[in-house]
Length: 109
Image 1 (tube, rainbow, N blue to C red):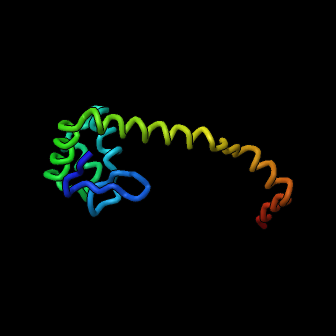
Image 2 (cartoon, rainbow, N blue to C red; image 1 turned 135 degrees about the horizontal axis):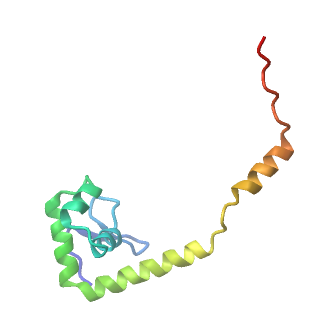
């Protein structure tokens, strides 16, 4: 896929808006969830509305390739989430309570 000057592919393969940390994946995902260009510009206030329109036009002109890229990103993120453990806050509280005795309440005179 040939990228216009407003899109850059990083070394890790992520496609970002040139000069921003915002990825093509995120804009396309929100757009496909029903957000308009104006809503995207509000969500990402560092992006001018004209740039959002250009990115969406690129997406619509290259939809099958960009959709494949987005699907690949989603699959990668799903794999990463499956590899992480759920954080058990109650277990942490019990462990901390066993390590440190409760602090007595100050007595009011």
